Image 1 (cartoon, rainbow, N blue to C red):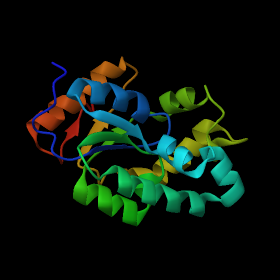
Image 2 (image 1 turned 90 degrees about the vertical axis):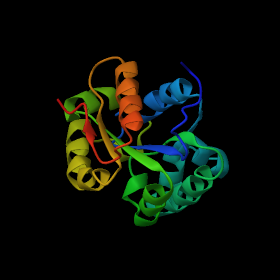
Image 3 (image 1 turned 120 degrees about the vertical axis):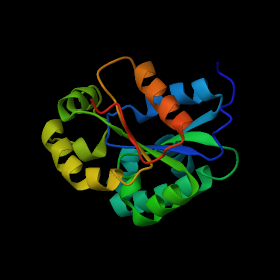
Length: 185
């Protein structure tokens, strides 16, 4: 069942708020579909020689977003793969346009208390430094969710095993209707 998915002919890009599980679900989805997985933040860190937090601190968010845009443009080239992006990547109009034109964008969405609980486990997220995670996530959701909604697919990440979310994604991809909501109940 882990053979390459015949219908995957372009990169699949996971977008959504921090803590929704883009990297974890992305790894499992890639294994399930027989594709390569890449995390754009990991690729940015490798290219820059700094962690995401260090890039934000040393050079600021605009510099980070510029590097992120270039890295994502490179990642969408070549064979189809699963790409997990940072929460703000899809907010950049140029990056979003590239993803929507050349990839299948999947918005992973979850309830804010679940996200706040997940992101509280690590202190490596620059946008949360010294702030209440639930407040920050609520503000980000108000700004970002209308933009995330432009993604081809909308998949809910529930407090269930990640494999459940992976199966929802696979089912949505098999249906081939890249404008439907899935698992929103």
